[in-house]
Length: 295
Image (cartoon, rainbow, N blue to C red; front, side, top):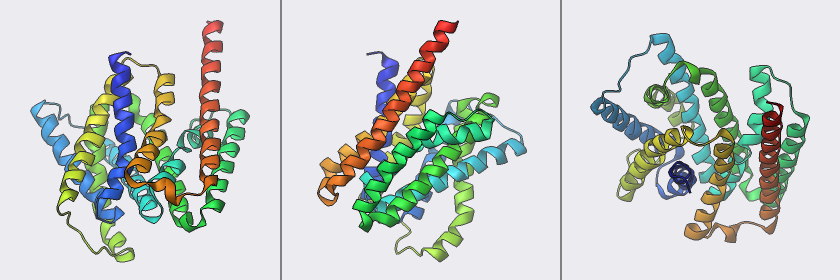
């Protein structure tokens, strides 16, 4: 296996691990994300400072990148909120629809034709979510929040694609994480008023898991992902990213025995979503081969 592919799989596995870590940290979702972004931002600025990669950008560009970073912070907040109100498996299953939702949303943003096959797959995945919802009604709030989290991650992905050509990837993450931290900090008084927290400071093992979340699952995964992008095709990356919820759900089953709290219909719904994702990847591969033959 190529080193780039190994790096990519490590990054995807660590992303899948974030859900398990979120359940382990004894803070509410707002303060969990606030501490994650603070530690990651400070560490990133120090790291790039030593590497002399602190490049300035214009103020208007900073606000643009910081806005996307704030949307990313809201996505994380909703994702961990989904875990707190349901469990890791439910939150990751909702997140696994992101690729299909992106396939439907991108034509609206980039003015491309809507692919009706992708719309059909989207309905297929929606059927999977419906089965999970009606067979796990005690997790309904977590499912609502998880789907809203998915909408935000798709929005972040689309907006990042619109600016990625104008900046180096290091510049984007350098300003996106601290910018998102600033945006989240401005929102925290309102969030604290709506959802008052019992605890604001991490304690004990919370510090360890937060550093793992910030250093390994945020900063390290970014560098692994960027390195993989230089060697691995976009199709392979998209296909590998579909393993993120699979890794996370398996970890939740092993570490927290979440399978014991899920109905048997959860697996039917999850496999419907997974089948839709696989068919989407197959469709991309077929179109890629057809384009290659035309050239």
